[in-house]
Length: 166
Image 1 (cartoon, one colour):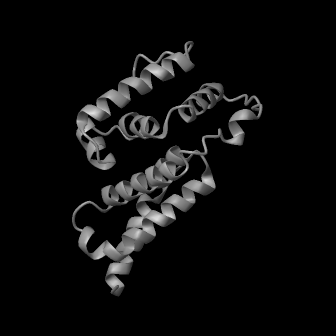
Image 2 (cartoon, one colour):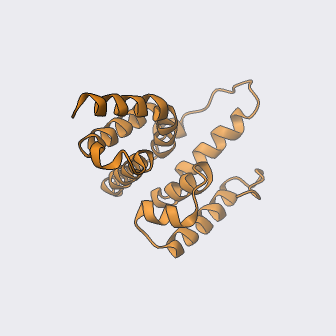
């Protein structure tokens, strides 16, 4: 890779890393796993940097992260155990909204991985159904049905939370 290519890559990573790390955290639920996912996706993207830098490098990197995480979920499908932080009692944080965020995070972890990915892409990333379908490699109808099932399940898990916006 040439020096100017490296400089553009470094600038891109410096500018977009915080947003990409937030997405990785939402997909993994763990900071160190999010860092691993981001670094792995970046390592897979660097050899192709020359060809993708003019189109949409952030979109490409996000797609790599989503696909790697879905592959990881598939490998672990047989070992369905809840993360230990879900079973431990949470310390009450005096900041407003903390209980709500913890409850939502715990509810998200109770969704199947494919439904969780759709929720993150549709409502956190605010992506249209067509883009979500493209990133996950499925049809728009599948995205719609997974979204419907996800929201229905979240409403069951969190009956006191107002999920009308979803």
